[in-house]
Structures are given as structure tokens and as C-alpha cells.
Length: 393
Ligand SMILES: Cc1ncc(COP(=O)(O)O)c(C=O)c1O
Image (cartoon, rainbow, N blue to C red; front, side, top):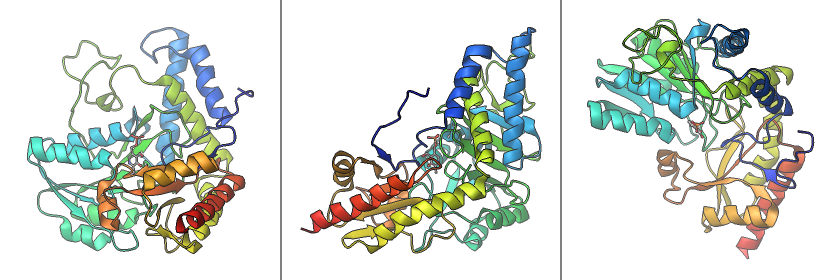
């Protein structure tokens, strides 16, 4: 592992897509588990299966605690945030009903809701964000109708980095008796989440971003008072004679053999966050580095930065364009000429780009992660200045 030199010379500023590199401890934990105990958890009577089950349950408890969940068994594992959002959205809207969501959403919310509209007669209200990139909780309150079953909000935008007031929105939902689902793909590990005090009913998370785990592991944390209908069924490893999928958690929302190597890595990712001083400290450190990029993006002539007037209430994710230049071409230049990795296009969030006026080409996105260095952001800032100067002619 020590011989591996990830992306040598590359300044990786695409952490909103996935954090890279991963901590060595995470890689070691995943490989160690795979080498020593990668058997089906708890489904047999031998000791090693019990050991695997213990690791799975310990990770469940650790993440449930991390999100302020009430019962570790209601923290269920799946592939990623997309998988968890599908479970939550289809499981809530499968008989139709009204859903309130926002124009900030990722396709992993937009598309499941579109399918629920087309296939189950659900109706959606998409709330706009203001010119700074925030949703007004009063708009959520006004949009709730008699048959509203669900409110879904993107906690931190993967395009413009704004962090939504989920505690205020949670209070509105609780008052109205509507289930509140938070897409925490971009916030888990970098913005604190407490389901109890924020009145959040379901948190969908992915392991491979700021939770620092491997790809292919994520999940849903569900509050005690919420029940999601079955939308899949299959093996649970227990009570095999029962005809239908089990109702009790965690089996209710887990299907088949879990990604145990992913769970082992994710468990270690959560420990990495604690070792680094916790979520708030990681966020503060990332924002310090992000400021270097932010200043360059704001101050460079010929660059337009979207919804980033201040560094408050945001993650270190910035979308921008070089005036008059196609973002995809700019991204290629940043990689080829400056060794800076970024993400261009619509970032799976077409409504955000429509709202900020960057559709259909989208924008260039820079994003910082826990293992980003000062050299990375300085290289990004220099690349912005140098490329903008060249493009200005
Ligand atoms: C806001 C948001 N939601 C959901 C997702 C989906 O995450 P995953 O691809 O891990 O399922 C992403 C991924 O970029 C995201 O940024």
C-alpha cells in the first residue's frame, strides 16, 4: 500500500464526485476484512460469520450515532445515495400522493420522482432557490398540501455548494406531519447532521464522498416513526421460510449479500473523521483551503462564479465558467495543461443549471476534500488565472 502513489502530479479538485485519494487506513481496513473475515454475516453458525456480523452491526451503530438516529437497526446499507433515495422515494410514493422538493436536486431525486409521477400518479412541486442558492423554509410550508406525503431536500448542493437550512425545514415538516427526507450525499462527513434535533425522518448517504469510504456502499437512516413500503424483496439470510420479505429492520430494507468490504472501509472512514477532529473541524479546514480558490474565482477577470457571494453556509464546491468558453473545453485544458482535475457539464443536476443560466453546457466545478492540500488549491488558483488571461487574449 505504501508503494501506491495516487494520481502522481495530479491536483485533484473533483471531491464532490468522489473523495480521492482515500485514507490509507480505509484501504487497509477494507483489504484486511476481505482477507480475514469476508464471509456472509451471521447467516451461518461458525465464528467467522459471527465476526463479520459484529463488524456489520458495529458500523451500523457507528453511523446511526453519527446521524443522530434512534435505532441502529434502522440504519440500512445499500449501494450508494442513489439506491437509498430510490428506496425512500418509491417506498413513500408508490401509491401516489404529493411531494415537495427543490430545483437543487440531483437526478437521483429528480428521476425517481419523475417515475413516481408517470407510474403511480404522484404530483411534485419543485421549489426554486433564491439568487444566493438557498431554499426558504416558508416556501416549503406554503407548498405543503393535504395529500403531501414527502418533502425531499438536497442538504448541500453538488453544483453550487450551498447548504440548506434543514433544521428549519424539518420543523416545518414535523409541524405539518409530513415525512422529511434529506439527501446527504454531499453533506455527510462535512456538515453536521442530527436527525433528532433537526426533525429529519430519513437521511440518504453515500460512502464514497466525505464519509471517505469505498464506492458501492451507502444507505438510509430511518427514524422510528417512519415506515417505508417494500419495493424490492429477496434473501435476508434469516427466517428463510417466510413467504414475503421481512418487515423488521434492518432486513426490511436490505436485500441479499451486503457489500462487506465496502462496510469495512466505510466503518474506517467514519473513524478517520473522528481522528481528524470531527465534522466541524474538517469543514473548517476545507473552507480555509477553499478560500484560495474562491478568491481567485471572484477576482479573475473573465471568470463568472455562480452563487458564491460568501463562504458562509456552504461546502467547498464552486461552479464557474470562463466567459465565452465551453466548460468541457475548459476542463480539458485544466487537465492537460495544468494537471488540475475538475468536473464539467450539468453535474446530474439540470434544474440548477437552468436556474443559474448555464444550461445546456453547464459549468466547470472545483471541489475540495479532506485530503486536498494547499498545493492543490494553489495550483487550481494559478490555473484559473493563467487560463483566463490566455482566453481573454
Ligand atoms: C447531491 C447528490 N445526491 C446524490 C448523489 C448520488 O450519489 P451516488 O452516486 O453515490 O449514488 C450525488 C452524487 O454526486 C450528489 O451529489
